[in-house]
Amino acid sequence: MPLTATEWLEIDQVHCGDAPTLLDRIAPESIALSVWSPPYHVGKKYEQNATFETWKTLLQETIQRHHRVLSKGGFLVVNIADIQCFKDSSMPRIQAPNLTMLKSPVTREDVLKAQQEHPEFNRYQLAALLGCSEQTVDRRLKGNNIRGGKYTTQTRVQLVGHLLDQFAYDAGLYLYDRRIWVKDPTWANSQWHSNSYRSVSEFEDLYIFWKPGETPVDRNRLEEHEWSQWGSRQVWQFPSVRANDDHEAKFPVELPRRFIRMLTAEGDTVLDCFMGSGTTAVAALREGRHFIGIDITPEYVKLAEKTIKKEVASLKSRLF
Image: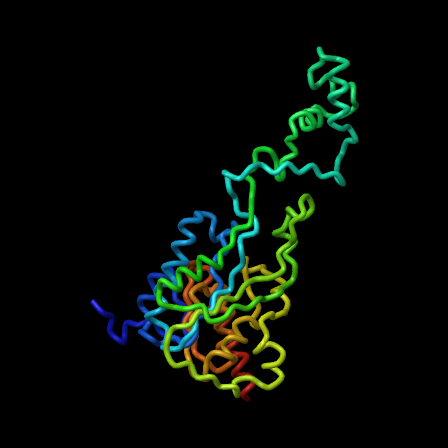
């Protein structure tokens, strides 16, 4: 049974629930811009129980429901990163002896020579003879210098952009633009960099999908210097959030603010399906837009409401 106008989700509120379900309760074609950053499937506390398949289903169902709620000519922006350490049990184990961090100078040739001279020795006796640990003897003989440990599932990079593109295309949305946010290097999440040739993560992707319809291009939404500095530039560079003490995965206000300024008009409604700490709502309020927030975690809904209340008070104080 269709919802009545009084049953649609209220604007300028954060609503608790899962995104696909609550998207069905948003008024049709009422959202000018939806901008959000979903879970990245990298093991954060709030995604511990998610498998790769359930993660993909969440993204697919969330994107699918946007066609109904976006206004004609409206946009969906997804801020996401490729999975840098995607566990793959079928991947061959990476033999990665770190020559600059070897604790013992004993080589495979040293062990083989000792074995040849003392064929009756076990690895403990060989270790005593060579002045190293029995683990070193085992590693040199078996070549099991496995990255991350010999019992750890190996990891590879998993690209995610093609998944979003397909989900959106199936929903009747089209990839309009793609930008890159260059951020601070995430050393904490890049433990592999010291024992491999892999790089640390320093950027995230911003995918912009479009719903068919008239899309007015109003160059007056940005100042001339804003168009030249970032409005017409594909690579955006600004710092990450310095302290994630109350939420594990914040993005800076500048990220949604730019899209809100560029892709919406004053009075439009902006949606964030993974509201988290309330950053998108803050950006919307600062730019004179309405917002709808969704988050499945009650703790984060309260956090977002607290953040929004503080921002509203700050805006009011500037008026008087």
